[in-house]
Each structure stands twice: as C-alpha cells, then as structure tokens.
Image 1 (spheres, rainbow, N blue to C red):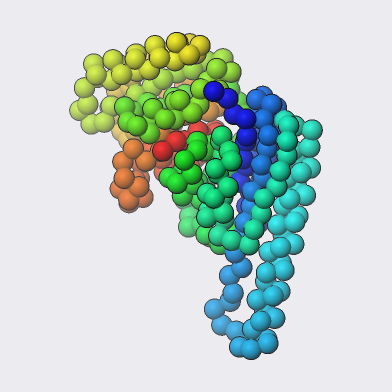
Image 2: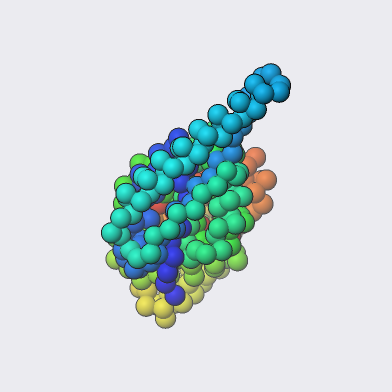
Length: 275
C-alpha cells in the first residue's frame, strides 16, 4: 500500500501554509499526485433590500468568493510546484465539507487543517470532524503551528475498535518510513490491564509482519485518556499520532469531551485519523 494521490483541503481566509507544506512533503516521499480542493458559499447579509439592489449584493459577494478562490489556487500551485507528480486544482461555489467529501473519491489520503475549539463557519471551512466521519479516507490533520511532517517518532493510540484498526492499516506507508513507532493503549476506568497488554502485543506483531518494528506500551488508567495520550506523545517525542476517530459516539465526545476532540484541536503535532 502507498499514497498515490494526496488531497489537500484548503480554506478561505485561514492559514494554509502548514497543510500545503505537509502535503508537498507527502507527495515527495511517495511520488504522489497532489489534488488541491477548496470551496466556499456566499452568505448573504441578514438584512438588505430586495430587487436589483439585493441581486447586486449577491453578485458582489459571489464575485468576492471567486476571486479569493483564485488566489487560493495560485497559493496552492506555488507551494506544490516541483513537488511530487501530477498537480490538479478543484474548486467550487459550494459548502466546503460537501465539496471536499465529493472529491475524496480520487484520493488515498486527505490533508486538512486543525480546528480550534470555537464554532467554525460551515460556509468557508470544512471541519475535520465532518470530513473524518464521511470521507471514507484517512485524514491527516495538520495544526497551523506545524511546519513539517516529523516521522522520527510516531505514536499509535490503540484501542481495540474498528476505527483504530483502520487507522493503523491506513498509516502503514508512514509507519514504514518512521524511525520509531510506539503502540500505546490507555485502559478505560478499571479496564483489564492484561487484556490491554495482549492487545498491543498483537498489534506490534502485526506491524512487524509488515516491516514495522514497534514498541508496545500500556498506561495506567489515571486521569482522562486525552490528557494521558498527550503526556505519552510528549514522552516519546511523537511528531505524528495515529488514531481511530470517534470510537465513542460523536455526540458523547462533543458533550463530554474525548480523544478525537482533543486530537483535532491540539496544536503540537500532526494526527492521522480514520473512521
């Protein structure tokens, strides 16, 4: 398995440099094609006149979106020039998440930006929380403060769920290029530690058969899983975390918090998520 096509999702009026840098690195590492995608929908003001004046406001707003999309294309092409193979741009006047999800059929992996805990504008930004649930492709979330894809140490956040199994399989091309790989499980509550040890041991053995030498680790169940995961990532110097997204329901994570919410909002390292 490899990444033959890397898709990078860009956003209007947002920092895009980090995700463009990482997408370009992926294209070089895997000699992959790069597809840039962006979309935005004009949001008319709540109060304006009707008739010709109203149509003028709408026309101006749509023209502004089109100009900004054109600037974004220029930024994409300048950043990806001479990196990887085939380069392609796709954009539309549409809701960003809907457009990106439709284009995801042509990609092996989607690179996108992280998300602040605050509410995001669905008219101009494709949220990673929406993309990972519906894209059917792994999502590489790149925080704005990250300026390269650091594969010297990769942390696999293991939990014996379908989502985590998909994430590890989806991450294999990167894991094969990593210097060090750590597979960690953080038992929930009074979870069975011996079962967790057996689980991560199986995963490291599976990885070894795929040419990836990994270290198994089981943490004590103290504090929140998100906090412990952040601590372990710091301990091993992880530049990338691999995890399954929304092993619990999205509603419970939104209300109570959870590992996925932490991973898409943290700003220290890249995260590969699969659902």
